[in-house]
Structures are given as C-alpha cells and as structure tokens.
Amino acid sequence: MSVEIKHRNGGVSIVNDLSVLDDILEADRKFYAECDAFHAKMMELGVKAYRCNDGWVNREHNIVTFHPDDRTPGYYWGNRQLKSGDKIFLGNAGEGGKFAYIDYMVEITSYSVRYHYILSGEIMDAQGNISNPELQPSKKRLKKFEFFRKIVKRIFNLTKN
Image (cartoon, rainbow, N blue to C red):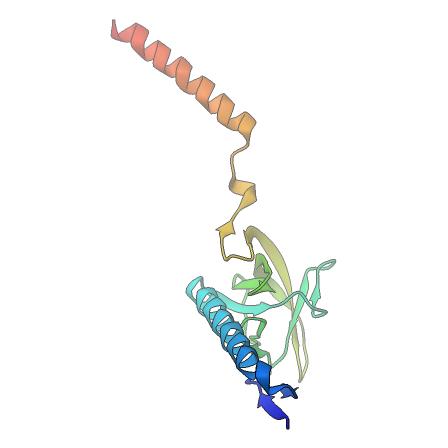
C-alpha cells in the first residue's frame, strides 16, 4: 500500500513505506514553517520581492526576472510592479543571500518582468542574521580611532591642570 502526499506548492510525493510516513509529514511541516517564517521576515524588512539563487538571476549583468506565478514562500515571491528603489532579496530560507535595490525595468513581457538591480552590501546568512560587511570597521581603523582618543584624552588632561 502507498500514500500520495500533495504539497502546497503543487508537488506530489508517493510514500511506499508507511513506517516513515509520520517522519515525512513532520519534515514537511517543519520545512513549510521555516519557509513561512522566512517570508514573514522578508515582509517585515520591507522586501517587495525575492528569488532563490536559480537561473532567473543573472549575476553577471545584475538582472533578475519575476513571473506572475512566483508565489512559493521561502523561495520565490515575485512582483511585477516593482519601482526604482524597491528592496529585493536574492537568496532563500535555507541558504541566506544578498539584499539589493531595483534600479530600473529592463523588459516586460506577457509572462515575465526583468529588472536591473544594485546590490546594497547587506547580506543574510543561513541563520537569518543580517550584516553589512562594508560598514564593519577594519582593525586598522579601530586602532587609529583608539590612538586618536588617547591623544585627545591626554590633551584634555594637560589643559585641565
């Protein structure tokens, strides 16, 4: 005997070994909960659309393509009405990715819209932590700042007496 599991994204799994059915259902629930949490976080961060790192992201020319049926939370969330300056995310729930801003529309067809994007420098790791390495102070800069602080403190103490 086998069981057919229909997934919410349209996929179907056939389970022939019923002893693993509970484990498969639990894994599905966990996966969709992670995808929903990722989607909620993206919306909270003001992201208008996101796409996983698939063939619809041209990193060489900074072009991303969205389709009207891109509605799989955690992987694709398309938007065909993006404007210049809208925030997007290139990545997915399990791997992290990079944030970018829409620059301009490249092409619109009946089945897709292509946008040129500019990377913002912000990245998100697989655990959901967001950072901007470009804004992180270097060790050399921190040492210079510390040295400057000591000089100012010394001058202040000399003028105080």
